[in-house]
Image (tube, rainbow, N blue to C red; front, side, top):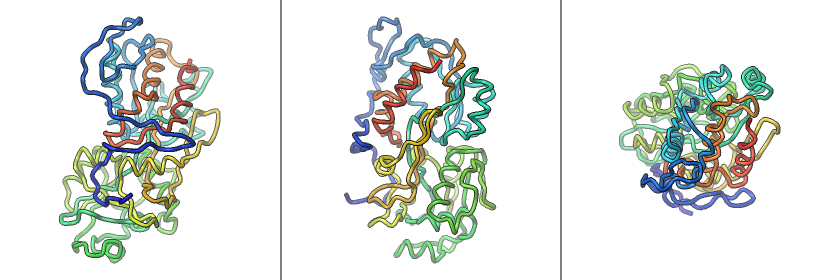
Length: 380
């Protein structure tokens, strides 16, 4: 396949992923919200979410966390609420760290996180999940785009080492020889790089740190487990949306955020030189190739996926994250449990997953989605 080094989203024609089988991929659901007759439950459904099973869902469900999954969550909430009359899902994209804090304080029914719970967070969750604990339910994957604004440069290529040095304030000019070498013929200006990072605790930050510490350990010596930005220098902005807005508005800027924010803001994104035959663009399709090799690890805490950041597979975009929903396996509040289970069952369903690709996300591999669907009904 000829790889485009342009950075626009190519999500309209994406092949199936393979993880010992096929990844569930198909066309995006219809935008037609015309109501259809109610099913036996009495709930109304819409053409946009025709296969949603409301299962007694009612009232309001509060959730918070990952801003990387916020655009996916908006799609899911829209379709679920269209199908389940009288239900309101309120998800706040405040960052993974903030979401887990709210979850462990009992303020939300579930949290969104771009990284699995740490052991100490699982232990803390036992205070809220009476008789149980918080578990990890992977729900969607996607590329972390390195977005930039640089007039006259449309096809910027970087590798792990240069990315690490830029965000660690060791490369400060756009015409640095390390960047010039990766971009022969590009008109790189003799101007300062404005690097933006997250001001809030973020799983996106943590995933970028894991990638850099794994692929460029000599250049990125910070704690790869940190959700707080660990390096000195640069400028901070809140959430994926805040960093994307800052990059969009500032000439000579660079930042990191989930791909859908680059697409929505029409921000150019970096292609990564992974050592493969050609640099790899940040697209859903290319992220899916990397996620196809993700391994399941751990047991008892739901499902945790391990990504190979060092992949050199052709067309595999290496900076990917798996975003989770964090919920109690036992001890959920009785009044919100039916809504929680119905909503998570929808998001993990084929119907829920297939709406993601046009928004810049990579749906779960079929094997993983099936495992999540098997866990959700057991929540109590």
